[in-house]
Structures are given as C-alpha cells and as structure tokens.
Length: 524
Image 1: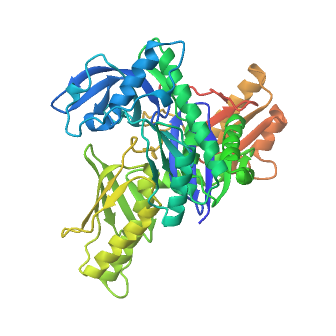
Image 2: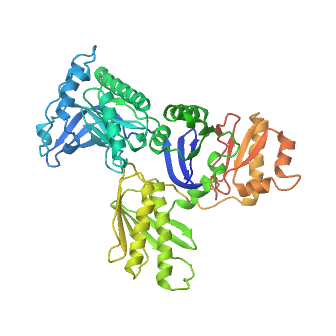
Image 3: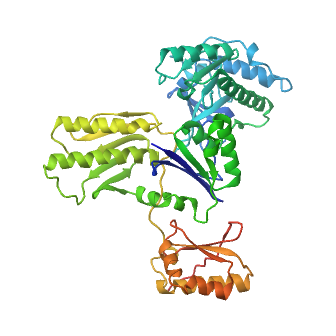
C-alpha cells in the first residue's frame, strides 16, 4: 500500500487529503480564521464547581466554558499546583522543575471541591474540541507529543508502546530513556521509535523539553487570564507527525510557505525522505489534478454508492450515526440470496471503514446490514470489519452482529464529524429556483471579459469554469476561447475546474487572488 498526502492551501481554508493506493481515506479542512485546538495548553481560571458531576468548568477563552472532570486532574495534580504557585510568585526568575518537590498523588475516589476552589488558576490541555453545544474537554495531565516520544511533566515513569512486540527492544528503549530523561519527567515511547538510535531520541527529547520551558515561561509572565501558553503545531505538521511512515511516496503542497514548513519538518524527523515533499505548480487546481475533488463529491452526502449498484445510507443524529446497507439494483448471485447478501455486506464493510475515517465519524455507529442466516457468514463479516478498522488511528470497539442483524461500533470522537455538502446551489439564481437561459452563459462570460479588459484594464487573468463548459469553449479550431483571445488579448486563460457547478465561474488575477465578478438581480 502506498500513501500520498495532498495539501490544498486556499485564501480562506487549508484542506489536507490522505490517499492510500489513490483512494481518498482521510480529509481534513480548517478555516484560516479557526485553529485546531486539541493539544493547546492554557493558563485558565476555575469558573464554577459542579460537585454533583465531580467536575468543574474552566474559562480558557472559548464561547462555552471548558469541562474538567476530577479523574482528568491527574495523580500529580498537587505537585503541578505547588510548582505553578512557585513559578507565578517570582515572575523574574524561573524556578527549575528539577528542584520541585513531588507531593503524594490525589485520592482516586476524591471530590473536586476538596482539590479546587472557584477562581483558582490552573494549567490545562484541550483533549477534545468544542462539539455541538458542548465546550472543550480538558485534562491537567499535560503531555508534549513528538514523533517518537511523548513528554509528561511530573511523571517519573518510562512507558513503552504495547505495539512493540520484541521484549528485548522494549527493554532497550526503556533503559535508554531512563538514562537520558531529566528528573521529574515521564516519557511514553511511541511505536515508531522501534529500532531508533539514542541520538535521534535524545534530539527529540531536547525539543520537547524546550517546549515545556517555553510553556511554563509563558505561564509565568501571563498577566491576563485566560492565556494560551502552548499551541500545537499547524494542522499539516500535526497530521504528518501522527501519520508519517516510510510508505509515503509523495507529499504535494500548492503553497510555497506551507511547502517549506512541511519540508523542514520532514527534514527534522526523516532527513533521508525529504525528497518526497514537492511543491505543486500545475495550472489545474491541485485536488482536481489528483482526482480528489471527484472522490469528495461521490463520497459525502446521505447516500454513498460503492459497487454493483449497492449503496449505504448514512444518517447523523445527536446521539449516534445510523448506517443502512442496501443491495440496490444488483442482480442476484447464481448461488442464492445468502451469497448475494454476504457479498453486499462485505463490500459495505470495506466502504464503511473508509467512510468512518474520511468523515471522522465518532460516538456510537449502528449499522443495519442485510440479514444473513448462516453464523459463519456473520462471523466472516465481523472479521472483515475488524480487519478493515486496523488502519484507523482512532480508538474503536466493534461488537459482533446482534440477533437483529445490527453491528454496533464505538469510535473515539475528538472533533466534529466532517460534513461536505455535495448538492450545489444554482450560481445564476442564487438558490431562488430560477436560472437565466443556459445557452446565454457564454455570452455572459464574454460580457464579463469585455468589462475586465476594456473598463478595468485587466489584461491578464484566468477563468475557471466547469469541465463540460470548458470543453464547449475549447471546441473546434476557431474556438470561443481563441475568439476571445483574438478580440481581448492572449492574457486570457481558461481552466476546467471540477469543484465548480455547471454554470459557475471564477476569475483569478495573476497572483492567484479571486476577482469577484458576480452579480445578483431579481428575476421576475
């Protein structure tokens, strides 16, 4: 299996697509005005105690106060708080963590009101983004994640990933980290650290320690609460950190600044693989060039077709996701309904595993497969689903089919499920239900070009239109495009763009900035 990462940087948002064997399996979108906040650390203030929930609400600057449960305070909470008081009491000189005293762990069965009080200052880390009507979820067990290691202050243990099977290698890594880690710090060794040399691990440990020092220094100097004291890396780099593996063939980026950012990160973690990072400079939009736009349009929405006419219907409610499997207009298999049902269900298991990752669906997912009579076929389906979900990084649990033919899946939900609207608003009537005659569309385009060239004096620009319209515009030796160029100048370029609706168009200047040439008028 080969993997490729395609990064599309636009003025308003950044989109990241992960391809496995040319199939889209993960899609992340982030507006530039928003930030990916999981992993961020804040110096916040306790707003309200909730003894009934054994939790509290903390103000960290979001619209909704963040939720912190007693069990998320962490065993070393008293040590954290004592050290924080020592740091804040002297804002000129930083008290070294190596001299901090480790206090006894908090009680497992304790109550929030015995540990915290209203108005108290705490350093917290976001573990779950705001979802729907809920604020962020917090923890006081701070952790700094790297490629090979996770650094945990006030935790003196070294833990090694259970996925490293070799007992000799586990012992080597544990002994190695015990010898290089500073006092009052714990370390979790990640799976990808298997076989790595001490120099690589030591270099990353120093980077993570520097992050800790910068974080506590910001907390020391903060004068206004809440204060952001540590910000996670950009979405592109954070995704690379968790996903990067030797099977990556290419990482394509269409923005120079982000290209250098990604290249620098890969040079840091895998210098021998830095050549896979490439800047995309093609004329077509980057997602169109790699066939991603078409996959997005066919993979999102309520109905998803997968093979031989079979399809899934995916509904999202407040409590759970519901998936219905339908055989559609398939012809029955020669050896009967049971074989037909098994074939459709196995295909559905393949597509559903992809959809869970692609949409980042979380919480409870209930799947209504087509009924099968044989227990061995139901077991085959369960095993296929488990096998498909092994590639999923999110924590999940799958139950065998119930007697009603339902499969229940739970999947860790860290951020809201990805929802991409596949239906398009009419760009001509702006959703009013009426459009101008489509045969006049090219006349409209020409009038826009005339206005730009002769009134605005813009001589060079690019026109993006739907591929079908582009085919019409480019048709023939003396095409419409050639006529426009002869009449208005050869600075006009026409680019087919799959993300546009049929009668939609966009003009871009020589710097790649969109020029708004749309007009709305009332149709009577």
